[in-house]
Image (cartoon, rainbow, N blue to C red; front, top):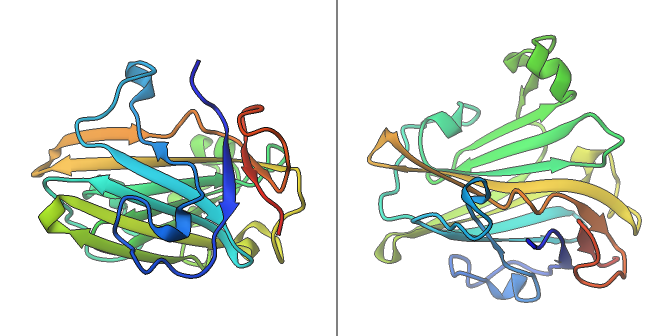
Length: 223
């Protein structure tokens, strides 16, 4: 059976070894492998990647290190539809089943960001909410990107402030959120695309002390 939960550890400081597979800052974090779950529970992409999630007093943090023999993008500015233009890492966070809204933040290999907030997926799909309504740049997120061409990899760290979710600080222990890390990996042009994701890691539990893989949750230790 596929693992469906992971403990999210508090991270401190800024990774001095940024760009490695697992920076010291995330040493206590469980690696989340990007897979192709729709092709089978053990199916890995040709070019793999690892991601990690953590938190600090400022917000929710993600780190990903991605294999990429042909780093490619035509994107030239923030809030373009980056996933249609080249290599990108996507970070989805829904702050609880009882809320309709979620954040979808894309970071490209050339250090651009598409920052969107969807207040209701149903209304967006129906057309009641337009693309112009959801494209935004006000999550307040910070990012870092580094390309390590000699090793055919690139790395990204994204930190989303608690304020983006309507919180002034780390949410109360036991809070359950949903999340996913996904990837668009293009090779040479926009016709050659490989997708991968941590899609079955779908829930986030903040601050609980439950056993490590107790249920479908991402468990954060308390502040």
